[in-house]
Image (cartoon, rainbow, N blue to C red; front, side, top):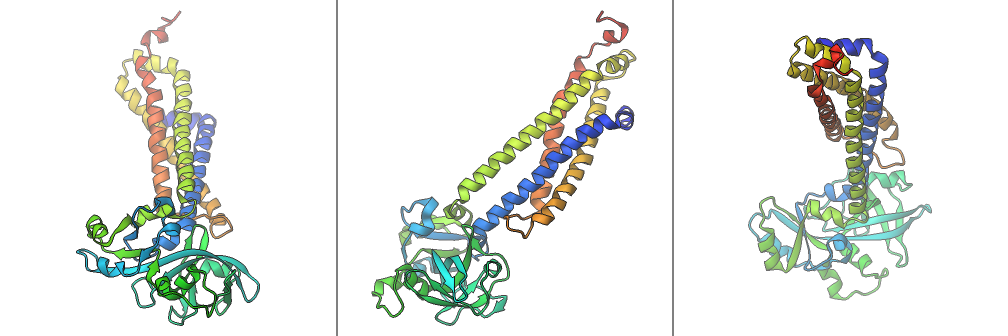
Length: 373
């Protein structure tokens, strides 16, 4: 460690430049992590906050469009309720609608149709929960978009009027659209395109998008066979959110490239450094310094540099992220994601440095005595 600390102290400018690049990569990783988490929240936070473990969709439905294409019979909920390991099951409706409030605010809403007395019924943080025939409970992000408690929104084309009676306590969005919970019966009429006062066939009230299921140990395959449905776990159902898979795959690919680049950059820095130190290393080897000691010393130097400047980069990234959080860009800083990104950056940087400093083992002590000439 003596040589490592001595070099860090006396070559501050050189190591500072290397560290600045590492810190910039770390800050970029934090911001990218925040954008990824923010996009996930904006895409599926409404699903994540449902108290369910899986959804039973129509058999054979296209998985990436299950919430828009699936139609199941509400009676299937009774079949699911009786299965071993299922603690609750209820029909669930989901559709997207264009609406306009009585104050002229145009807003797209993801309509979640649930039975008022079921385990899916939301608890309102402000106002009241579901109960009135035309009442809806909306995400607080809808208020940020111009909606207000007590407003009446009208569904485009069919003219169904819904009154905002409650507001949820946290962001609920689906496919980047604010969620509005409404009674299942009203959702069925809106989904069928019925205008107010228009007569509906009994079949309209027997349909839902899926059966929402809660039960950690439920045998989904056996229940699907009994009910004639096709189940997706809650996490698998995220892919049915519009654009979710494409967005998360793109960000994951960017993160992978950034991690690979960080390992290459750190490895390249220490390769150049090792080449520059070759005469000094040759002298120490000629004086009898063990190769293992020199390797450990060089690796410790890389680790000190990485830990110090990754911490600095994370601090800068968190500071910049604090300005973006809550703004117009989907962004959320999660401690777990930030810590994971920092740990992975240090690990990959150390791996890159390890490959570089292994060159020390090939340094010939004779070069210190002019053997190269």
